Length: 280
Length: 275
Image 1: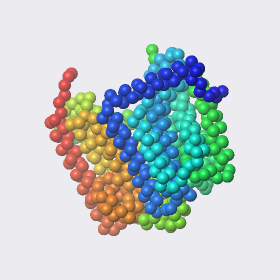
Image 2: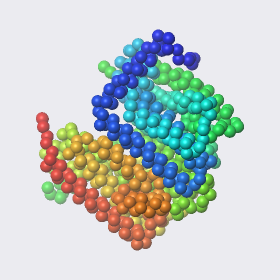
Image 3: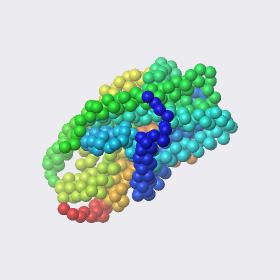
Image 4: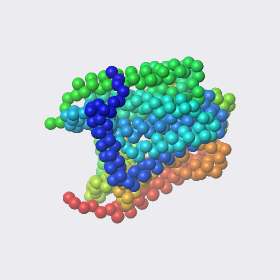
């Protein structure tokens, strides 16, 4: 059952303490190779700038993309950067190692620790350089709002971060479920790529998924694996007021996030039950 | 070494590399099929752009042309991309494995070229199914098969794209003789390659920015993705096609010479210690 975080609970306090240590360790590790850290920040930024240039070029030929004008579209892109920046910083570095932990038998050491295994596997690594994407996203969000002349309501400002976190949670669930299959498959290099290719769909507005090709994707990735909601719902709070009927989508996104988290937990626990140590 | 023994040596390297590559064929086929997934969002995005703009053509490209272009770029990249080549060379230099080429009668660049040919042959064999499926499903985006001359020019441009891709990445790997670590450099190369080669969008879209377009088309990157795709789609023909192929071949020769030179100088600079 989902519970609100209560940091007076010794279990929650212990987990928060461990996470703080992981954050510190990640920072120390990154600062040991400062040059590399700086290069990673610059290259992340270069990648974003290149993508922005692509869309600037596209907007030379059209006033809007499926109803999204230039600055609202930038807000959409910025929301995607916020979600992906958080994923790449706090979640992906840890989960990506899961397959190797299983293959080499090092998962044994994590299982023996007196802390939740899913928590430790998910958050034991932090890649601070990836936070560049998050900060560039914040900058782009501000720029999009300013240039678009759109002043979000206090309600939208309050609810936006919640939906960004929901987006992170949805993508996190997809990643954990895919990683869990490593227990049965031994190695899932292709499934790691699969996560990347599947989540590409979340980086575009819902409105482009039209016609015989787009509609099944829109339905499947909204209601079965709800990755399309990860960016689309929060972006709408900032860039375009939710139209009638889309409020239901926003409410659904909250419910879907909860269901995803519970289902992911169930799959992860099932996967761990099937784990057989590979170490001697 | 006599020609006969050299041919036997080349054949042995090629055979071993083929067998090595076939070990992971299932993972390979699945990975290849998944690489087509982004094309779905590209098709939908491009359609949305054309519908929203109300235009029939953008820089001479129809909606179908752009989708066909992106599909043809996938084939170009299947020839010109060289995953792990530069990083592998740099690692061999850093860890001292490069000395095996110095003490054995095996040429490093020749060995790596044969190994890469073997990898590519296996890739095309395994990827043929996924490629055929996707191209069959997307056949409506293509205007039809090009004539024999265009097809010959296209195949030539693909082979030259392979050679440019190989020698350019091997050259970056050779920088490892001086700097040991080339991963940052490789990432920059990857970024530049993605945008300058025409992988991201057809370079014709830059018509409104003539200086940028001239810069993009003066560099060798366009021959890795844009040029072969544009040749197949008939966007480049007549004297422009002949001129383009000559320039592409010149870049291939230039990178071959630069790569051999870098290797010769690098080996002179290289120091190996320990047992």
